[in-house]
Length: 95
Image (tube, rainbow, N blue to C red; front, top):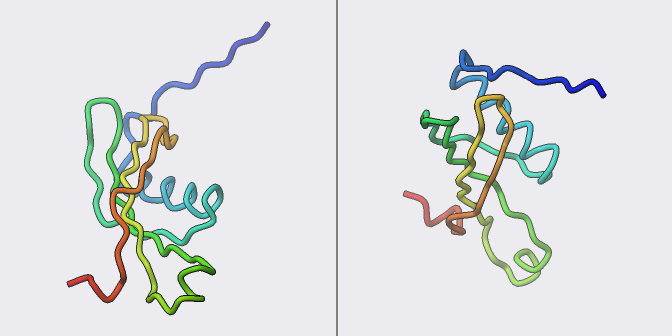
């Protein structure tokens, strides 16, 4: 059996990480994302993302546009290895 390994992309830039994260959000979660913070960690990157949360429920009950704030972990190969929504708030609540 032929096992192929990929060397880590240790030379990846923050721009590469932003692109990989936005592509993940659009392709997998079907959400338009805006990266608001990127920081390098020992084993990859930590990214904070703002994404519009659309919901028929919110529109039906007259809620304003809601934004989800997500924490995303990206490995050295630019794979999203985990994400979680940290916060949900109305866009108008942003300062």
